Image 1 (cartoon, helix red, strand yellow):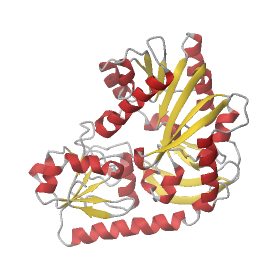
Image 2 (cartoon, one colour; image 1 turned 90 degrees about the vertical axis):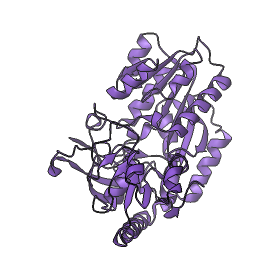
Image 3 (cartoon, helix red, strand yellow; image 1 turned 120 degrees about the vertical axis):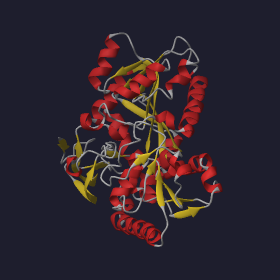
Length: 416
């Protein structure tokens, strides 16, 4: 049912330091039906550790991937207009910078519902998605994006190469953290890249997680949490070099890296060198960055719970926006259940009619905000707060107020 490791997922070291434990937590992407018994939900230990050897931060135990990314996996990237627009901009930039054409090949790992690859397909550029969840694959194929229903692995990469497929551009956004076999994954990218090809990877950035106390991004789907310091040896070990790194605002704070086949040069690119120096100053390499993280998170969770329960005790009606995994983690960590929130609204019809994992708050259509509005609406995917507040102007116009829980708890009257 789970994979337990006492070793670093990158370098294999057994020298792991404990950072924080959240106790037993349900899978944040499994939404029970109201008829499902409470004790049917399986809870898993959620313990965060870091490798003294290479600075990788990871979960000690994780459920098997097949238990998370199954036929009921409910995440569809195209629900977020912000993400779709950013993906279109990225595709346009890659086409221009790399000179991609109808003779090129773009491959995306964990391509979800085709939200990104459609921008290449529309330009006549051959594209292939690799995605393990069947519902997302069906949606992607429905908009004309060729998609394989598979987990990406080194063996899959080799089989594609044997079929004559290699990529000018490999994209792997928000997937590296989900990978149990990091070395096999990166080695697979190396096999699949053409000699002059490049790979682009986005992932939640450890520095932002720690500095923003974004504990809600720590859950079982995310096996690892990356700094550039930890990634350099992982990629080098598997025949790739990272030649560019840049921060992006996605997911509340992410890093985008570009990698290629090793050139043999010992000179690091300026963006990589500067980022590594920045991480050294913050204490990534000696562990100072992680000092007091556990105490600060415990204090923050207690403050969130107290503030929201006080509003409820004063007679306010509370609801949530966004049945996202990070929202499920926040609610479970703070033990905020249906006694505090009347419902959670979400645009994803696959989630509507179900319950938030663990805390069992009903998930309903956003239309309920019109028919049964709350006094306060807490935005669980707080990194999309501006987009959501803009969408819900009518709620604010009717006197409703928004709560943005992180990185700082605040109450807003409308779009700012």
